Image (cartoon, rainbow, N blue to C red; front, side):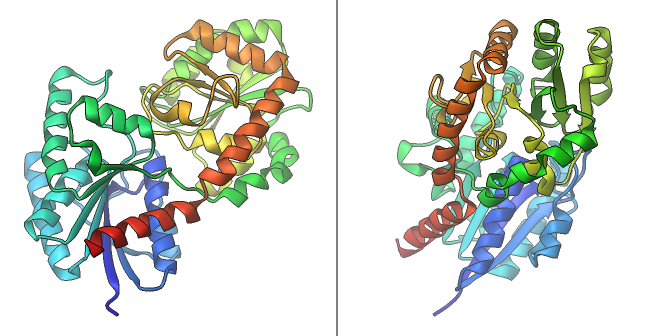
Length: 388
């Protein structure tokens, strides 16, 4: 039987949820019999770190197109499109599967030009959203509608993404399917073994209650809301500490704000860490807070539950599909600092309830988020579309 040739395309292979999802998918398909897989990406530019070395270390067939960048640039984008067409001619894929906005548009167009049998796109987070300018939203919606015509299926990482796409009339409901983003579940289930060592490394005392957030230090990630909520929480509980895991262009600004609020000594910015260390970093936390304003379904939410940690989250996009208010965690209105503060206080002051909610969240996530399940569902979708 002929082997199934699959090409995945993503804009850049930085450290991030979409990139980890894509890399786990490619690695998983490589381990399945009958698949030849190529991953095409642009350069991993930016302060977020990169996954290129992991991809190479794990034997991924990686093809980097220098002109494929996140920013809109007509000349560079035209060159990237021409190179994608040439690469796809060379690889002759049965399936092209794109990820992220820029690669999603250019990759699907290149595959459409060459009449690739099956074309898919995964939406990890929508390019149009309430915090974007009106003209850019109109442009992105128009481009997504156009690219949807070239797509046999559009995969979303949360049902919430489907609702938003339908509201924007991106495509008919029949084109969408939700496949939750997979992760290496066992690493998080065993994370408790790292707790004492990592807390000692970070300078936390045994009595400290650590509220942690994992995200790039950048706009829309919500660090400001956590900092604004912190002084009153710390006034009532002097043993509260904040831990921010991640780096980005806003680090200096956020450090300055912590000093202005008078809490800098209680806030730890640990910087960028390798993805393999995320379970250990979560193990050092007592509560995980997710205050981003725009996500598909943030990977940190199931990761926190898998580590057995209580979660407080803004009610954005797919968060409510994991954080079920009153059942698995605390879900509060986005941008509401007061509600965020009260939920964090509830998690701090009701440790028994917090542990109970976390246990239920853990049980759900153990069943829903293993990478093997994600890869299996994606492979089944490929086969279904190829058979048609």
